[in-house]
Length: 404
Image (cartoon, rainbow, N blue to C red):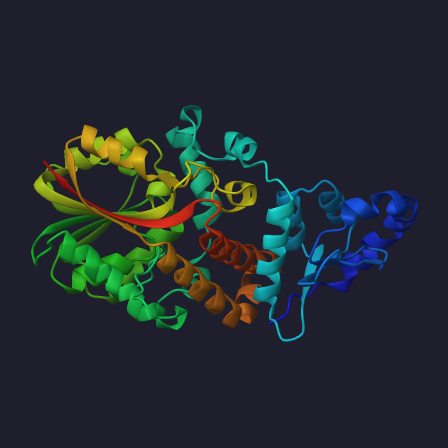
């Protein structure tokens, strides 16, 4: 796979940038130089790497060059999405290897103002945790037709949270790893046929299909209109209308007259940063002795997502700091039965999704646009980098709780 650019974009911007580039090139050369990267300016001038080369960055517009001069990681990703920034891999590498090398080089030499971005775009802080804001922010990521998501997830069990890989497995085992995660959730929550199960953030019906096929009386909740329509269609296709229901609502305000035996939450806790409110609602809906299964992107450093993820991918979301999450659980009447660090599994999951996106490039780009393709592809490889770098504290987490 290669990352390509529409040449009309470069042709449009190039004349307006040549003059001031020539004037500033001498003074800016030390600023432009980045160890490991050849940098090609809009004028065509190449600034060679100051060390062993790992990839080439091509800046096609004045905006892209400005972002580079300002060491603006978010601006660089915006330029990449808009085809104003391209990457050239080394011979023998693919675009993913080049992208990872570039992210590593910039991350090691630039500063990302992630705490300022969090104050503007996440729900990390108490003044951002309103229902209205959460609902509006969720639409940024999830309000894309089902066909987009099914282009890289399992069509049988479309689950958009990390899978469970065993040691020695590569990303190519992703479909087996997906079912293994669903089986783990059912076993640890001691779900049996006839049990009442509630799932938060139903997505595209993956957990509904898995639990419904095994005789659960199932309720799935979703805020998103696109997801809601997809789940209704999947419920009909799976012949689960008698035992499974899908409700479009906000979990914080959902009410049930009957207690549930188990609650599952796969990849939604990042959007529910009022942990005491979350646990109190779990307790209201769950019978005594009932279980909660939860998995999420976690952080070991209580640090925000990087800026571009907070603004362009998951506005309103925050990585879950496990000590705060578990403190809220114990305060609200839950025993903590299991916790698992799934960093390696999340790494392989994101690589699997990214490779599937690559394989579906023509479909995604033709139906949803090159920007949407780059948005998802770049985000997933940035996640892979985060899980492998460790230095940012990003990890994957599974937790099993029991109501006292």
